[in-house]
Amino acid sequence: MNSTLIQMTLIMVCGAGWRFAKPAGLSAEHTRQVLTTVVYYLLLPAMVLEVLWTADIGLHSFQYTLLGVGSIVFAMFCLWLVGALFKFEDRRLGAMILAAAFPNVTYLGLPVLEQTFGSWARSVVIQMDLFATSPLLFTAGVMVARHYGEDTAEKPKSLWLFFNAPPFWAAAVAVILNINGLVAPVWFSGVLQKLSASVVPLMLFSLGLALSWKTVTVRNMPYVIPVIAIKMALMPLFAMLLARHLPIAFEYQAAAVLDLSMPSMVLGIVFCDRYRLDSALYAMAVTITTAISLITLPFWHSMLMNSINR
Image (tube, rainbow, N blue to C red; front, side, top):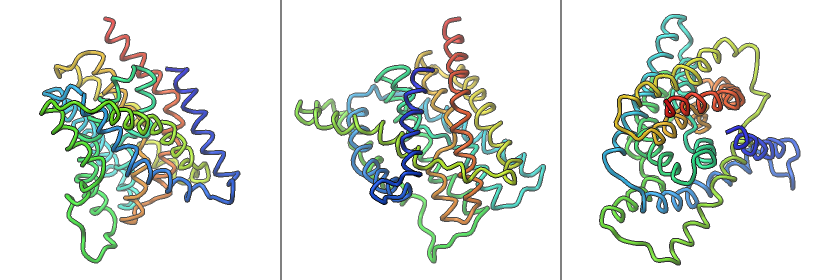
């Protein structure tokens, strides 16, 4: 785990260094937008298709949904209680709930789990994302953002329109092909594998581009502390306890729980901007939880491995 995190960190540092150097005059924001667009519309769908086409999809996929949804709802409830107790401003509370509840299961979870457990962990990450995290983000997450923020659109979009996205379409096609027992041609599998191989480094580099220590301010620290406590401690602990009550193989439990132990997802900043939540606070939460994850992820990995070996 430590060796994996060192590798991941160095790639993210390259992204962070780009923010300062701006090679060819390309800013971090512009570069990240281009890279994430390529990943979202081409490379990630290719990986989803490759993995889910041959994955063992069954009842355990529903169990990943229960584990992911249960853990995220738990974190949302905990942060809502803290907000109700301290009477946080709506714009801040909405950003805090998103930051505390939704982990970076794909952009950081995918490289960490694949390097730590092996290539089989990619299936866990993708199923956790497509069957739990993303559906909840585009429904409950959007409702939270709308409730605590402002809807700037003239006509609010239907929540279901968010699922009209390449990764979801790729997942639907892959599941259909998987269920019907169709085998991919060798040449097509080779194309998917080559596209998939570039996902991890580009995701990590893009994450480095998104991190900025300029967002870290003393004024926002009292609001970030509850996010850290819930996101990096209470939520993984709850996920580990919940996983023990689900009939998932121990090694798959460990991978799923570690995926839910990831820091705050970068995508949430889009919802903060869209619904006028406190974007600076959310960006600070992403930066700090990502830095702290270098300590907490090895800790949770050790706890999970000790639990399996008992």
